[in-house]
View (cartoon, rainbow, N blue to C red):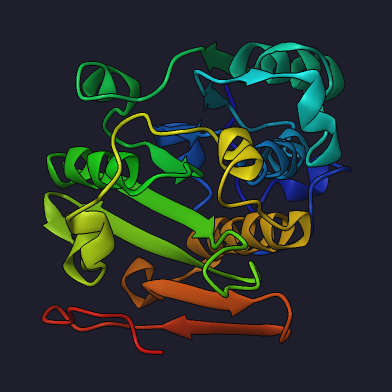
Length: 269
């Protein structure tokens, strides 16, 4: 089986013409998208569309969510079918983007302390689009135990307590051969290190229906920034040069990357 490389991209008419020195990461591990709501649903479509274009690439993608698409969700996100989000998106995206050498598999449960070791495995690129800090901490803690893993975790504010719902951030945590290439998000985000919520936490839809409705525009921005971090990971000549966090504000058209030293305890404003 011929691996996908930049040298043979000319044989793939639909693949993007871009130099990706780390493309092999997609064959060495899996792409695991955790959370398929307002951010994760759009992210899954974007990531899979990109991967599907590399017709020589052997890649496994896992879609993880215990929540369901309901009729009431249609005002906030695309709802292809009613049912469990992981199962629905797996069926829909397999029909739209499926090809040889591309495996798309659902996990129709929330990540919790009992299944996290089974869901996240060595060599994975994990895209965390969850809506509660307790699950974010769980993802970080699992990644800290692994030799080789990448975690790209994103989220955004809701409209509450005077917030416009336009702000969000994306953290990138990498481990290679048992050492950190970047500090874990729990080191500089105390709200993740000491969460006030619980696993699995309310879904984005439940939040929107109660105390913290979210802007669809900001969800889209968060998905785009996470997709950009995914691309930067594949395109960077030096993985250690990857920024550690990107902070954005949809209303102000602002996106700022940050590099943090190992002793950082808070993200710069």
